[in-house]
Image 1 (cartoon, rainbow, N blue to C red):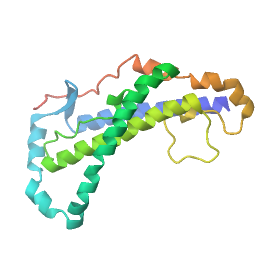
Image 2: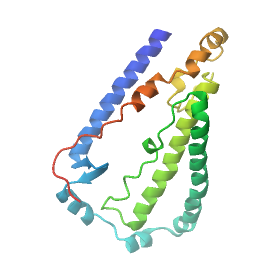
Image 3: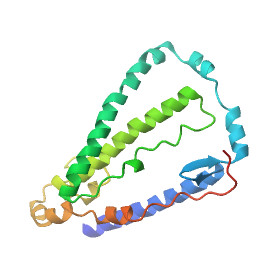
Image 4: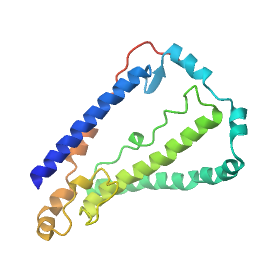
Length: 213
């Protein structure tokens, strides 16, 4: 079983590298590069984007009445999102050092990079920012909870999970009592892979060509 696990982990890492390469190729095809922490498009690409921008009033006129009426319910979610965000920052700031768990870097999950796209009107930009925040907070919460679970209850479920979190592969097998008692202290403190990642900040994606503003 350990051999199978190691083989699967190795294959996953290989696929992640292939995905990163594919994303870099897509970036070059869409003609943008990273500059000062943000994506910067070529001047010609920006001009094309502006031509495809849908006017705000036309955008609103094209919306259905039901979509307009339900919009406030969606935006109301910013309140619980903000409270969850604040709780996560306080929680891991206080508890993770006590447990010896590496803190989750919030900026890796709550990312705002779509609001400046020139082919979006004002409302589309606001929606993108809002979605980035809501989904980012949930992703941030999932990782905080995953690391917490690894420390307190690193046991896999008997039932197959549809979408296991990032730490699940480190967990012990369901029902293996001997393994649990033998390995629990090691597993709950096994964050070596995270420490090696956080000690070396990820390099920004590569890109070619002149940048526009």
